[in-house]
Length: 255
Length: 255
DNA sequence: GATCAGTCTTGTGTATACAGAAACCGCAAT
DNA sequence: ATTGCGGTTTCTGTATACACAAGACTGATC
Image (cartoon, rainbow over all chains, first blue to last red; front, side):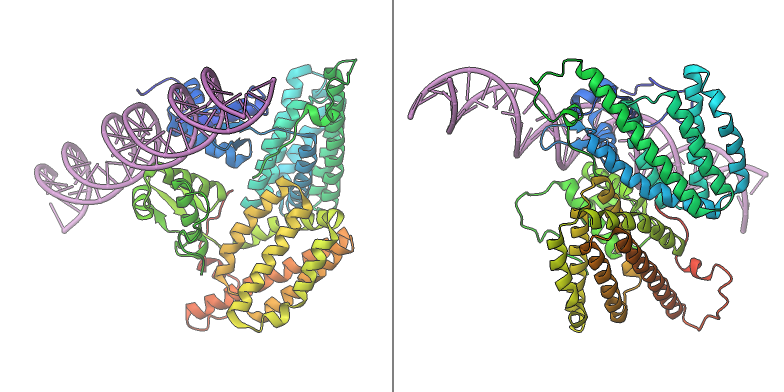
């Protein structure tokens, strides 16, 4: 059977393993497949419409990405996201982004960042335009990240950054940010961009540090609030576990 | 030299994909499979003695590790190591190790590092004992790295560090260090260890920075010398061009 | 002699068949 | 009632078969 299902309009028909990878990855990142979900090869292969061979390849890549863990013997499992793991991810993120921003400030093409600067200046009013504005804002962030990657040049560093961003995407889902925080974040980005344009690595790094600190604080608070809201007003003792840790169980990724 | 095949008569019979992965990885790290070598699925599967299915899984992991690149259409290829890529790797390494060492200084169990300290003190005389002493020294380095990993706790950071160390192992092959440099390196390590024991994150980071700088300098010089020796004639000191970069062609990994 | 086209070989991508192993269920025994 | 044991049932791990695509080769033509 050669399923012509998704031509996608794009050029290449896309290999089955690639389709499986993208679909699973997308579903994990979107939270369709919740953390802790146990998956079986046969079941997933059938659902996605590929045979087990390409599906296994897809799962192997997801494991390498740290989005999935191989369960001994029986299938595989979407990795959990604990509050602890968020802090850990930010420790790595800090190491990488400070370095990236430092190098970007040394090697940047000023032109690219001047363009970005203009766009970030419009962020506040952009964020008044509801959901579509927010979406546009996230696109802007992506462009910022791409500009950094391009300026840094370093494939090792960029690779590590991409990995971190993958996990960040999942965390972002846990706590949708309010627009106040987004406007604040835009201002913080602007500062980083200015430092890069000025070719000031040290300032860029410190500005990034500030931004990450604010970001982490905001994420943790948002998750806390959400946990309270979901836990309901009562918060009865019937669930005796450690409060926040129970909501987002333990475990964490590897790569 | 590295270990050979299956000296581990350990517990599990080991899956075929795992065997293939370890063998290929070992051979790449040892330089048996030189950078740029083109590999074919069938040929490698036959050589290693597994079928294509597990071999493909092994190759997928190697690609994820950045040790191998998929070639469009025809087989796969051992990734090259350029002089540029060494510098890039060290940029990532610096970001990660400084952060690791910083966190280790905050969270360490002093006892573990006190033990390490004792051992590193014996390094100089250890390195007088020829090849076996050098081997013992590298074991010591591994123990140091493990102690850092344990102190850092952070799985994300540790994962990224492991990836870097993989690539470092390949580079180490290119330029076997002289024992003078190793003694020097031991002293630098000692400083880092002392800072960690003292619980001084900032000093630990700076000491690590120094160490990495010295290490990179030493590696690059060693490669240069080796290139000169191999290039035969006393290549004039016209370093202006891509002289050194030409020896170890372009390309680099992705992770 | 060179170039181009058609075929032929070879290698990947995918599906499937098969074997071994681990979890599940039920039964029985303490 | 609980626990240990055996049969059963999946599910994984591996091998293999098959289809398609991309080179390589050969032969023919200019």
